[in-house]
Length: 113
Image (cartoon, rainbow, N blue to C red; front, side, top):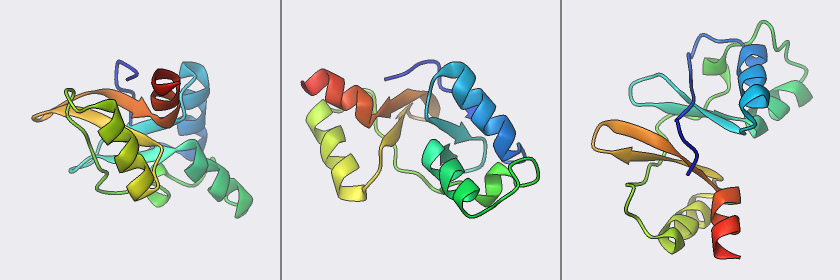
């Protein structure tokens, strides 16, 4: 998993989210909502393809709400199965109420190969 967990405000612009992803070399950010949400590079590309102004649109306009999460002790094969079942590429890792990091499909592929 990638640590520390990178978080963005739901009020951030798509430009701010994209800049954070680029600067940190990651493709997803947890959004500080209750419950937490997620915004991915795929969300940003879809918005751009739709002609959205990335300086005007907010993360809350494109984020995925109520994301699936995994505990830190879950087996990698189970994480891979969840990603396949739900059609997702990122899962925040949580321990109780504490968000620890993010596991991506890239992480899974690297470990399983």
